[in-house]
Amino acid sequence: MESARRILELMFLTAWSDGKFEGSEALAIHRLVANVPMLRELRQTGGIDLAAKRRLAEHGLEACVREAAAGITERAQRELAFQGCAKVSGADGAFGPEEATVLRILREVWQFSDEDVERLLVLATHP
Image 1 (cartoon, rainbow, N blue to C red):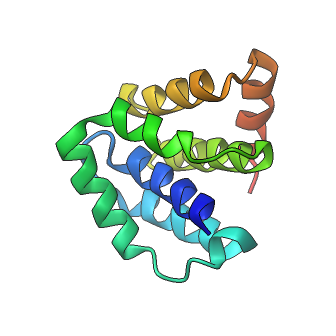
Image 2: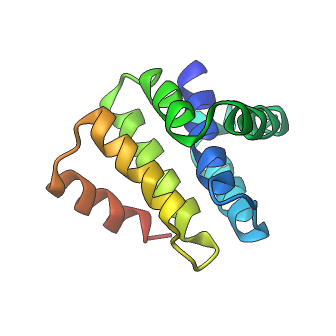
């Protein structure tokens, strides 16, 4: 349950990274929560959203992403988180530098190879 919360937190951090949370980003997160059994267990997501926004304002993007990422230890969960963040970052049709920063930090922290990133980005573009 803790990993699921951290995955969701990373997706909310991605959405808030550029200072605004678009409806299309909220819809992307909602779809992921509805379709991924591990995330569906969370049921309530509003508290995670508000906590992520507050922490982002207090500590900055890099510190928040690194902290949330550090709590996800299983490879499959890391890949799910990366794909989720990629889906959220592209949901509004604009892939900004802040959203790219989230993916860069995750890649660095989890030591994903170029091939890993390419594969996960391809998977993220599929419904």
